[in-house]
Image 1 (cartoon, rainbow, N blue to C red):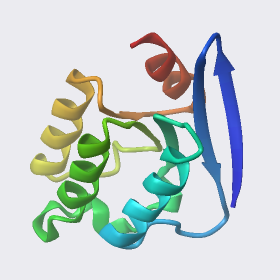
Image 2: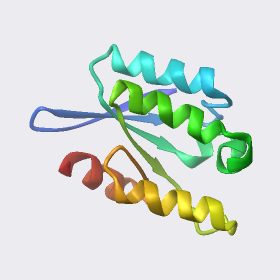
Image 3: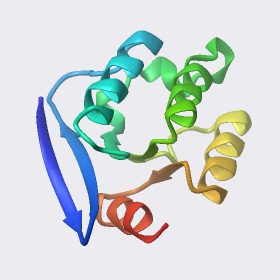
Length: 120
């Protein structure tokens, strides 16, 4: 795993880059969060390909468990990926609601992720 750092003024964003899944369960999500939090990052970019596909099946509650940990630490998260392939209404609603707030967003590319995390 590589941590690419994006900076603008005093804002620092950690982008995780890896070829494998980094977050398979809530414990791994928490480990990623804590590792970066203690390196003074409060904004993180994760790529969809680095998150277990089960995250996007809301019935198993994995997404809720992981995102609650980000909320508890007040760490902002941008997930970059192609989300139009998820056709279930619940996941579409979840993504739309998340994108209305400023804690978690689902965006199509790195530029959109950086824009969201630098703006707010």
